[in-house]
Length: 108
Image (spheres, helix red, strand yellow):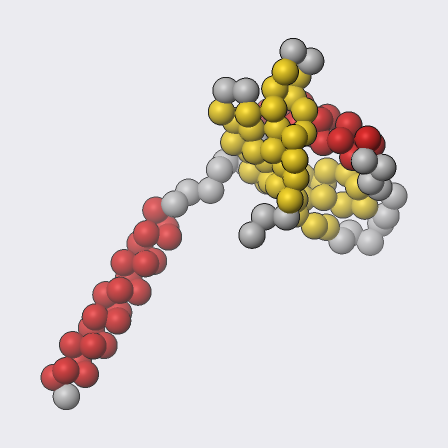
């Protein structure tokens, strides 16, 4: 019985440590409309160039580091009223003309 109590205590201690580690990670802050504006424009250009009938519904996260950036965007159909959305992650590179999309994928 003593071994069982030690195992249960160890299990709960491990769970608490994992929970504390997960809580310590903070998500990137939601950007203001002004901060998101150039990235929404870059995504719009990318979507037009790729002939995708999508639009940015919201920028949920934005991380900018010097001349690169990463944004998590909630996307919607441009001409739909169904309200269905999908989340994509975009990678950006800044050049002389501003921010450009360099890639996208669905985040995991």
